[in-house]
Image 1: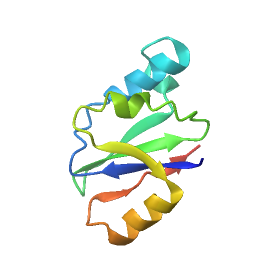
Image 2: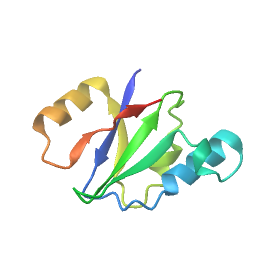
Image 3: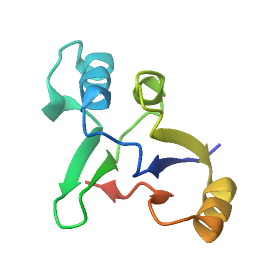
Length: 97
């Protein structure tokens, strides 16, 4: 089943715990550069944007350790419905290379 990462931009604090957890699950080391999830900071809008890189195996470690519960995986259909109904600040995560 194809999944999409949904972000609640109002909840993401930019703590980068998701990056550390992903890198540990992926490479056995705490090195954010080895992570499939990256936190991008948009300073003008004052928002943190988690971005998923291609290659993510959807292990869900990032959402397990997201303390503010700012990210979650949903089906493509649920992502489309969420996007259609969403308030400003809740959106599917962008994908990056």
